[in-house]
Image 1 (cartoon, rainbow, N blue to C red):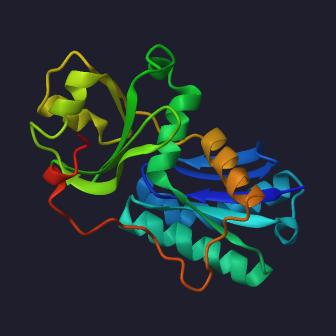
Image 2 (image 1 turned 180 degrees about the vertical axis):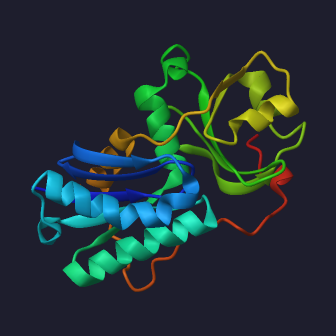
Image 3 (image 1 turned 90 degrees about the horizontal axis):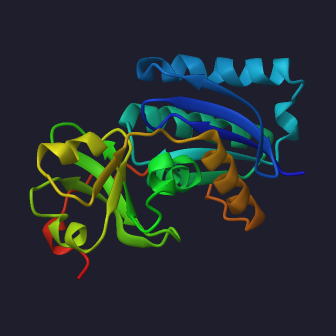
Length: 231
């Protein structure tokens, strides 16, 4: 049956949803990032009541593990792990950046007109810092998830070669440094469809996290990213 509870409190918008075989049954959304902690448990309870669902019947709990807001990641991970412990269910951890890329492929009108573009999800990390990665249309990473201080030269080589669609709440920062004909921008949020489809894929392949050792993926350590650009 594959009934999965999915939790996303990683960035601006919090999502809670129940799905069967990758299809959304019901969901709840919170738009205020400061209220994610108070929203989460109430939303789960209300969905169970409204749609006659019982937590004991879920087959797994999935959660966005990062990168993203430190507080949001801790809230989501703690809740997901607590439910898994209590219900004796497996835990699925999902990459926020990959989910943004999947959302782009599934629902971005800009990408639908530019399917040869690389996809560069960006999560705002304040100032000119972002958490980012670059994916092709097959979701193969061209640049692995990394923290990055955006410079005026980092993306030049890739932009000269092909369009890049920058997505997420950090995508606007590109306009502060670049003026390039191959720049595309869509500040979309993670969709419930992306959450449910990826969590179901993980469930089908039994790609479960170690419940005792699962932690948020903060991507905090900064490195010399100028040496990472693909040749």
